[in-house]
Length: 409
Image: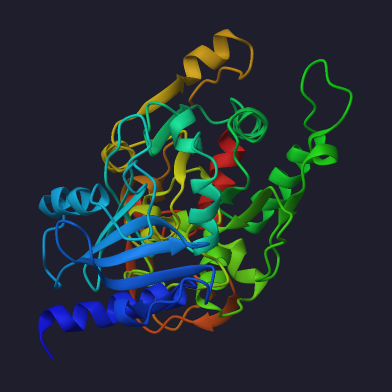
């Protein structure tokens, strides 16, 4: 089988997973299903690899290429087919939805956007989604005219990141046409807190609370309520939903900040027809830990959604991931001046252990804690362990040193 044929075989598989029926031109029957992908469709500029029909209307085109092909130069060819004359297509305007695809990579463009540009998507959209978009020319991305897919909000700890996010969610649902928003948190407890804040949120001048007008679901299982407008969960839970593997809720109690050094392998996900890539219009990440850029990145890449990050501690990777698109900044100093946060004084207390470290002798009985599961066990040390002051309260906890520090303070 040629590389081109292998790529088309994979493209066919992905289209079928998304709910498209594949047909050859000679056997075409546009009434057989809602979404029909017609292979080798004739146009006045030559046969197109695939023309996508929804409810008998041609809405899109796919230009297929073998794996390893750089797809950006292919866009011109796709645009040519989109503007070509098709049999049964009476519309004079070009096809709205343009795809370039290999067996592994898919690029998508909606030419109706104010400044159309291609973006990589994890999978093909369902026919129902293209039907909805086709019937609504004033799309969400059209309303967000700058079309910046990633935005970063940098706010000091304690300055009200979650409150700010809920305000944004309210406006996106009520004024930007968003249908569903995913609110990702670091741990299960933070998810509970976020849910409480959504329930307590009341816009100035309004009589009702947020949850009285919008359905908020905190995901504690692998089922997403089809009516939910806001879904709150950890990225671990969303990974579980996409892969179909249930997880114990205790796994959501561990902060990504603690586990990022323990697990090196990237979390791989595959297309899940029950959770299509268009499930969320926006994803808000509350506290963007570095693990979302490597270990868990594919979970975020799965959805074709605008991404909004909230963090108090951005670094170079944070700015890089969000394309340096910082839409708001509120520093700790500003929050203190505004009376939102309180100032503090730093007292540096040095002990013999923080200065010189200490030694754990072999066969000593001490508490051991598993960083991943947080379980504790009372056991003997296997070998001598010399640790420095820098390792204190990171890999080793010394209760005597804590007592001495608090006693001095």
